[in-house]
Length: 92
Image (cartoon, rainbow, N blue to C red; front, side):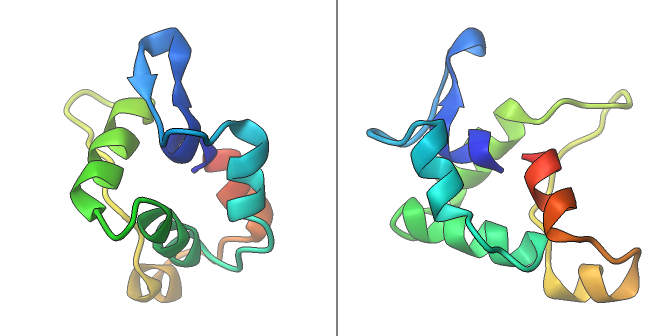
């Protein structure tokens, strides 16, 4: 989630202007769920969810052929394995 905000210079993926790893951590501080992290990311992108989604998909590391990253939702979090704040930070 941090890379969605800060980008990945190694792979030439721009993040938000003026947001590096430290500022990204501040934006995501104390998130309670992946859905809350996504909400904060979209807010940081001034509500431009399509740009946030494009960056998220560029920085996501696929584990299977054809896999694509999709934003989390509260409903998905409730129906599956409970995620902790540590899980949210590790994924990003």
